[in-house]
Image (cartoon, rainbow, N blue to C red):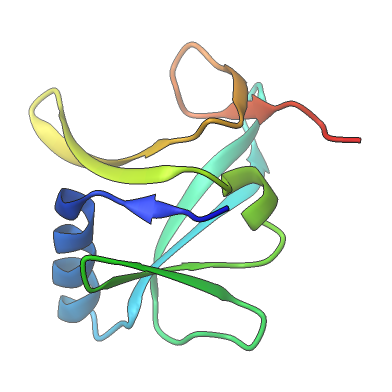
Length: 110
């Protein structure tokens, strides 16, 4: 399954990665928070041999192979939240999230 970006997210990836001299946005997950996992965003300065790259609207989303199972089928969006705008992952794999929205858990696949 792919990981997609909305047009709004792709535009921001191009702006932010271009301004920082990157090739795209790196999206991953790490152990964190009260429900177990949290998203990690960073400028992708290079694409590693094992990285998986998804491209939407001319922007690259770079994902490491350990994070991919948690992100498959997701869509990255760029939305207004309060007074600011943020990247938001619409992830169909999430089974629970904490009250503050900072961490999430997925159903373990056997």
